[in-house]
Image (tube, rainbow, N blue to C red):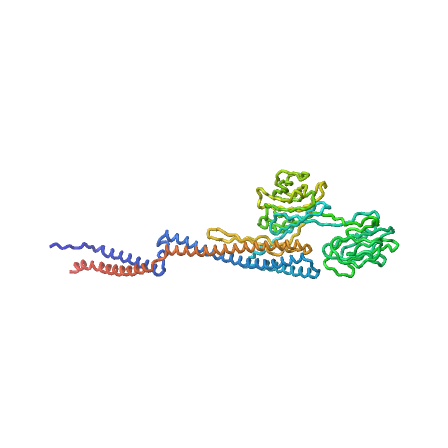
Length: 604
């Protein structure tokens, strides 16, 4: 029988070393299991898994970024909410203001008209107050940033003509805040007479056109027919002529030969000729009484002529003289301020392109033939214009005037002020005014400043142009760039100047009812466009904010998938680690007892 004796050494207890390693390993496993159960993480540091920990750290930064983005988008959405509310309220006021503007074109008494104007002024002030006070967190999208606003005006004129001027369509490509108008002023005169005494000219010069006035003139020693031309414009006025205590002529009364008395004058509008037979034997002093014993309001009148003619001559007729005119006004904030700016410069300052750069305007025409002269202002960027009638191009920018309405070549793109001329024949049909029919620069602005109809063969037309400007504290465009992702993408929300000045409502000349209505309509269109813009931006910001929240949540789920512990598994591992630690400790205890038998041999 052979006994197997375990090798052993008093220097090394190999079994104890192995048991100690098992104890240490079980302790490490137990500590890791306890950490995962207590923290809920299977990767809580780089020593657990360096690669996954680095990925999770980067993803945590993304989660923080998406949180900041979501907060910024929510703030911007609230800013647009507030701006939209203010723009909608301004739109409601402008609808009511437009109704009042239409009323100004009705035949109203002076008191009623002034009441409407007062109401409109109050609403314009309210619009301005709303625009200036609609802000959130210090951001006001209905004004913009404070700056110096320059309002620039241009007046265009063409030579006087005796032909009645048609109502041409307004033609322009302008940015918001710029306005143009076109028409013709008319003055009336009487044919000259060699019998007219110098005192009549002096009397006309002294008449001021105020509401009520009496002027006395010495008619001289020559008998004849006295003729007074009164232009009462659109508001009614009354005028009477007296000689030696007798009313010899009056507005609204027919001419009576012999200088006999006539009835009291009645209120009239427009041009009127008052005539009576003058006899110096009845007294040379003639009284011209304007609006005597009446109280007209907001009226204006002028005396176009006062002559003495031979009674054998026919009664004179008022001679109308027309002066074609047009105007342009542009308003924008500039930094640094500009002393004068055209619409193209205003568009750049407003960060908005002109509207209607390319287009066609139709004109039904008029029964009167003549030569048409058109002032076409293309400003700094080139534009083209052409006029068509009866299937032929009769005028074009860069082409010279051809008599008889003969065809001309295609247009050239031009800059600055240009005059297009052609002979108009109503028998050839309506006119088409075409602008930038080929390639057009979207930043270009242009305006037809004035159009005239003059007799064929008139001297070549030359335009007169005058400019003016003024500067006040106003607002320029403000851009709110909102981050939409942690990587730097942004969404821009721009301001819209809806103050009274920005909408072209201040200053307002209520004397021209059609211009008032045109400006109110333009303001309403701009406000409606602004409401649509803010509403669209609000929805887009809301979608972006929701996406930011969902993106952050999705990344957090991804991080959890990488580093979160499975608590069920980790609990089981913890119990197993505890048992292994107990068993390893018992094994170590047994292993430490094995050397005792060797020591016992030496004690015998």
